[in-house]
Length: 147
View 1 (cartoon, one colour):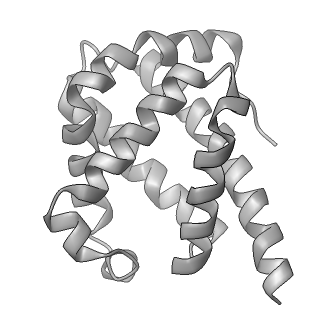
View 2 (cartoon, one colour):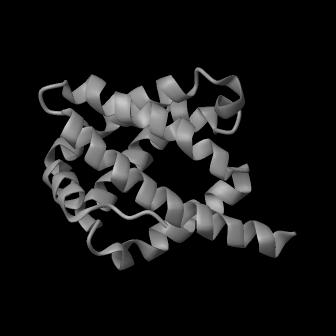
């Protein structure tokens, strides 16, 4: 499993205030990018998208992750809910790169290149893949149980 370096974790924690302020804008922009793929769009509850519920939920999850990146045990229940939802909707390991390719540019689009520097996006990339690996492993266990 991948981990995020100490420097990356510090950068992620330092960006938490920006996420608190612009998180929903970031996740809305991320979904707009992600949903250019109709197969991926079909996996999501479009009513939750249109109401803004899903972008708000994801923004909250990303903020909680940023604040707790050094204390992942605090996120156990939230991770289990995400895993259950992902398994219910058929999320697979191959979907995670698509989300990364939508999320990281969305961060830069919303925060601007002066704030979302290459260093910041690199840190978020490390953090994203650290969490993605946790989710992928837990989801694989759930899929194996169901088989």
